[in-house]
Image (cartoon, rainbow, N blue to C red; front, side):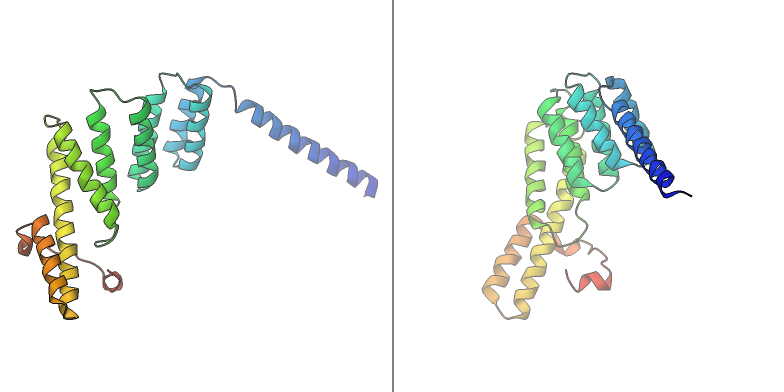
Length: 215
């Protein structure tokens, strides 16, 4: 085929592609809030979470006062929590608390954030800062919402966290015992008992051998 004709076809193809992209982009802005909301739900149902995040951003950017926003942010937060993306889930929970939380549902959102942090503990003896932060969050919840319907769930999470902290301090005490540092051993034994008195009845978590070496 003539080289000149090939060049014309190539240029025409580029024009078609760029025009098609422009049309697509034109369709994807300045849409009603319900359009973005429905699109986000569809993407979540198709397990396209990154795309759903982008669509939520479009909804929030174009319709800051939409009544659909509180529902949308809760849906995407819980979706990320279910997908074990706890940092993202907590980001959305925090955004909800800042912008949309009412007195009647603030305890529910704070409970979900505590639950998200609790589920984030994938390793038995790591994430100590998150341990302390989440225990403090449970204490705050218990003092602020003593009559909440989620109070016993939060107390249960707190108990599990305290048992985990106690086991961690016991492991450190045993380490100091092995290297013959009795003062440090005693210090961490007291810390372990302070977190959970009946420490000897705590069932150890089964950790795979390949992970146990690094715990």
